[in-house]
Image (cartoon, rainbow, N blue to C red; front, side, top):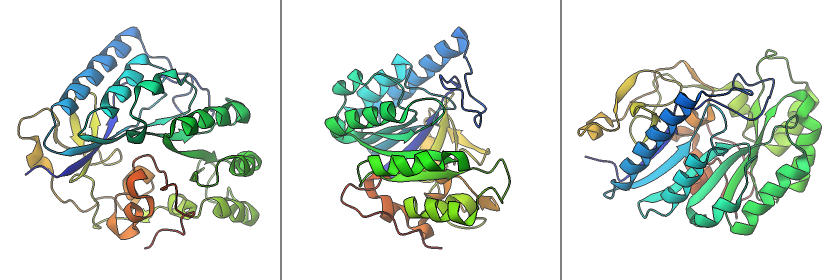
Length: 296
């Protein structure tokens, strides 16, 4: 039996990005024309499938390797999906570097963004200007940053200048080992993002309940379904007629989960209660106070 609601994390073959962040393997990568054409065709097939899913509600999060919203096909797809009655939310991870006029074609209450600020790639004023354009349209979003120590001064400035009710998250920087942060660094980060330590240390997850594979799935451009981006085992194909049979409760097989997109769906952490309708885009409900930390 099909679940009443299904969240889909979609990641096609597109891996190009217009930014050159030194901590990202996809910095300034260019896709070939063939890859872009294949990605656009697979995206169109996915949107057509969503249009046919009238018996359940859906949430969609685009999680590209690079930056998808500089591509017109993704902007058109998000606008189209936001107007479908069966789509509760369509969201995307993005650097906010694109023109915003297309947002006027979207249903603002059903589109949202998981925004990352990259200090070496764009001025803070420009990034905040794009946030203001989302605000003016009533579109929900979160903002985050990779927590390198050199980014901490701008992190504090970003917190001062964002709307107080916008959740500002910090992804732990791990490339320089477990001693990258000093005690005062951690105090600053925790004062801004009380959930930071969940991301920094990860969750001992093996055998624990997780909604991925049951009501949350990861889908690639070919429609191949995995429970999440981290667990590589295939569980089915989205376009198979009997796909729903693959959706079943599955305990986590990993010793540790360190990815927000994964552990956010572990019931014992309470993230669904913390984020509410903003779970896909990592955004707190507008009226909520800053999160006080996950349980467990």
